[in-house]
Image (cartoon, rainbow, N blue to C red; front, side, top):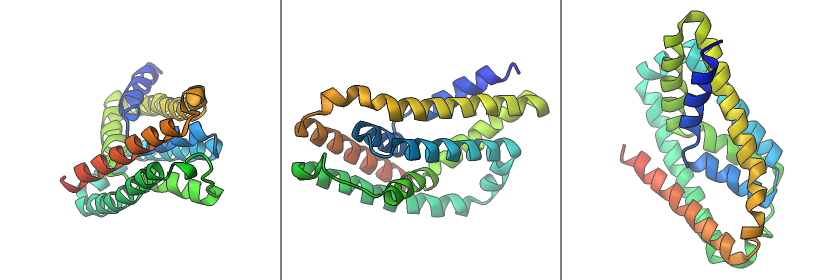
Length: 196
């Protein structure tokens, strides 16, 4: 049980970094668009990945490096597409607040941003799994529980807490700035992935 707090803190330290997934959750939260579905997809995906890492799947991922290469290049392509889309939205301010996406597209975007991110396998599966396993056979699952709580709390807070910034983003110019920042972040992450 003493491993819950280290799991929580380690999980938060890995998940709080700005990345494609967090930027998407933030955007959906600001738009108040299908926040529950996005939070659910991200949190459940993290729980599955944490459990896989603690169960030892990280050893397989570590030994099958080609899997990470495939995911890396799929992630680069997706991030480029998403980043360019954000920059295009910023260039056409009339479509910013009015843009409507179907539930299926929003959920699929959340799934792709989560599962096509090679860092999720390195951080959540390999690193978190390795750290969890230093807590012994029984303690590793308490560690996983702490990391899982961190994910659920983070995604819920980010998705639903984003509405607090709503008044700041009530003008099209603010949305334009947000879309430019998200677009540049996605392109930077894609470049970093492509360069290894």
